Image (cartoon, rainbow, N blue to C red; front, side, top):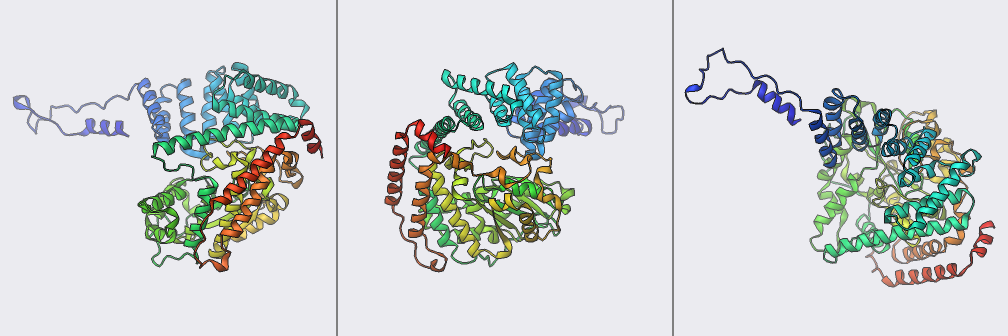
Length: 588
């Protein structure tokens, strides 16, 4: 870094002379300057903090490892900062290194509540779940109102297990108490309601759990709407909620009309051997909606030595959306020919994306892998551009799940900050229904126009009821040799940072994935209504594959209005039911 450059300069840099005091060039009596001493420990610590704040996590980690800890291995602050820098800088690969640093810090200061909370959160991503739960309860013993520890402890508690009964009761009481105090921040209140839903659901109190879930989602949706309104006002009235059904349905029609035929780039992108090594990894995109089985597929493939598990990279969708946005020039985005624009910018998008994903694979290891996984689910809307952008044989796996199971799976999940972008729809049952149908339709279109050898479709139900068969399909599609361990993802001890990570520590078995939504059917009328309305709208407005060469029909906002009216009616009727009625329905 800069310090090394300065040390080098002062150690061997040029000699400056001035006036009569300057020595002649041949005077050998002049002694070289000694190297500048290393910076003091406090200076290094402050610089690493600044690098973390600036998002330069890897530089911060390197500075702490090489300059701080060798001189002060007993520094609690240095070990803690190193754990944070490793986790944020290395993605999922940083979980284990971060835990090592946090454990070193905990040994120095075991009564730090914040450190125990860090340790608990990271351990929860591994197979060391009981250790994670213990760390969460240690946090709560030190700081009983610590919200992150309450959330982690709730996630890791089996509320039907007698061995967890004491902790389970304490968690329910504490969460209920905090909510009643009404002193939580908006974010903390949302987390508390989601956690209390999980606890009550585990105890079989489904009516009370449903109330908490409805409140949690309403509050999250209100925050998202408020943020969108503020951004819209700041942008002079330009909508900043493109994730709502109106924007997504417009995008669906414009994509289908732009990609009416198999996408083909007459001038393939010029990608370098560094970006597309002859024997190196190719992008493998896993797409669909959250809760449709993407983490199961990722864990299956993680056990294969030829697959590198990357992350949920935002690079592809961001590059495409940025390119289209710059090409709008005041024109209605729905009138743009996306395929033509992407053809023109294929080189730039491809270079940018491949450089990013290849940077996560060590150069010396690239020849060991055939694929690097990108599990950014929102890429489902842009995979039609894959043949235009990549010249190195990228492949795509699309995932689907039955409507109500998928919808409820999203509604009951509070997505982490890392995965929250793109999941705003998941806190509104009406938006969930529309997004489910619209996403299914756009993926059906890609299956129609993309080369069959580049795309594989799987369902969640296939993955959990027949993991051996699903594994065989996956490996044949990827032209990889069979590895038995791929069909047993629960045996892989690697970290899982998604919301389904804890479930995947157990064997895949259909009885474990019973239709949980059925216990909450009495709350899902808005979802059922919106699914029906969205299907009708797609049938009326989106041409089937053989008719793609017709001009697109205009979108009628009355379709959305009538659907919303129906949803409001259904919601009103549901709220008129008593809790006793709900309990009868629940028991059925």
